[in-house]
Image 1 (spheres, rainbow, N blue to C red):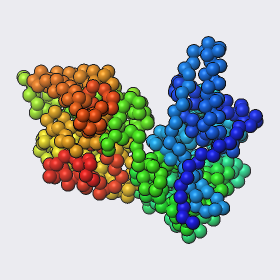
Image 2: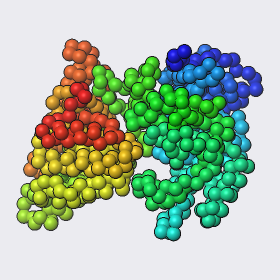
Image 3: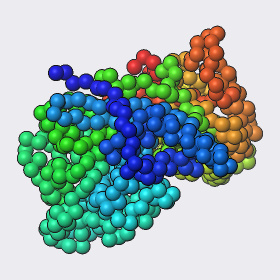
Image 4: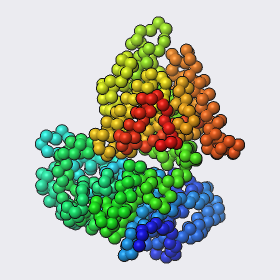
Length: 617
């Protein structure tokens, strides 16, 4: 029988024993954070952990009852409205069992769902042992759990958290901090959620490696995880459980792994690891596997279709009796019948970012805007950076000194000081940090190995989720060399990390001197009027430049021109009613990169002085 997807939409009635739990879970979605909105399916999803899946009509009645009671009691709470999200899918693989593949529109929604599932389990059973792992996606799940704790919706005092793995260093690594995974989890979760120290179970790095391994075996034996939360790695690995399941790795419980030969980006300089194995994972009552972004699409497809269980993730997915695979739309891109490619925020192939959806795409991210000259960030992407600064760390990275710009009666060093001070003030206007690279290419006239290494080290140090940079067809010579330097640096990082770099989003911008031709942009940001006002203030901080050329006027006119024409020209069609947007917009070419070949294509366009080709790839 051929495998297929079908909607996970079974209707169950709710019993009296679950009424209190329903109220608690309901409260998770009716908070000050999201007043007046609730996702029906999120409630269904949360309650499924109790073996119940109330249908839409049941929750609709509960919402109406709540609103009615609030009106009768003269409460000031906003009425709750239904907000239907994407459906879940149940993937059938064999008649004897099936596993759930939960597809979320964005990574942000996915992490909320994982946190909701965990919270609903904890409401039902506070004395739960949760096995957790490090990683950007899992960290966002823990942030949501922390919010539930801070809002007094769940109690974590009886919950134990046990680490999936931990790194150890040999004698040569004495300078490295001990227990790096524990340290990371304390910073991102344990301390913020006020988890009692006694409830955190982990390998003891103060013992010898051998003694710690034996001690941890006993700890896990006495505290087998009820739930394990794991990210799916490249090739279907789970943490450091690598390779084919044919090599007896499925028989391993708590075990040691030599990680000496892996790259620094993978092992951070450590040489040994203690980890749970597939046997331990199979002993957990529930397993949540997480995979997000385009670079996991092929992995997701492979582990779902791999009924021979050749990789750790496929083995767990096809053999564990209670496993859920959480993926976002991008990771679901190669699955048939998943509707994952139908991006609700995409219109005619253009990604439209507005105030209503910006948090779905940009939350808790590090965003770098590379500015060839000190004023390019504000001129080309100032409103967007201000827009994104609310829930993210945004940085304007000035690549060159700009000392050749005319400023009367000044020396070169004085002009550098003036322009960097103006760039610092610009960054403050758009709520961003300012960094300065002073690349040699500005004086040499072309990119050098020194420039590449400076940019490469800067990117590796800051580990950005998003990078803004000039587009490949930019006509300004300095912009051309800066663009090339950034692309080569990213390409080298990808090659060195063997495609294991977390997904990086590139956003190429236009400027008044190098406009996008039609067909070269695929992303439209529609920031608020206030963000555009901040943009103008940021540009005007460059007094030495606007006194000579009114860049504020030119940039503002371009945003208004784009906002006037693009909605009808590209989104709705000539003569049709365009979607509602702000009067001004900023345009970008957007691409998610995870392999060197993508960068090679951009470098080829750059060499030919051609802009990106958004709709011909």
